[in-house]
Length: 135
Ligand code: SF4
Image (cartoon, rainbow, N blue to C red; front, side, top):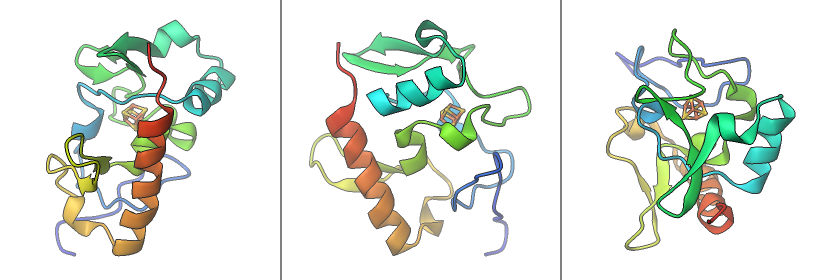
């Protein structure tokens, strides 16, 4: 598809065909975290309070200067191989009203998602909804 390419954040990059330079999904992130997400990130040596805080009743990734705490200066995810489940599911999200999986219209690569990818990422997005840490 012209104008799109696979943009690799890291060595285990997934299949999202992100447009070069786009990090919209990592800006002002509201990504909720599950216990598994937290354990993976703590396992890298990060302290919980470095990367997570409660907002809106859920434990979520922190932002620093309007960017996810894990987004580096070059726009790469510092924790890509162990990024949170919701980051793996994106741009598939669960619509809060209907409970259905939908593509986030904010994502300019959303129209590149294949049906089998949608199904798998919907499963992950639903996992985040059911297992997000509440407080
Ligand atoms: S953890 Fe990585 S992929 Fe997820 S919002 Fe932060 S920088 Fe982006």
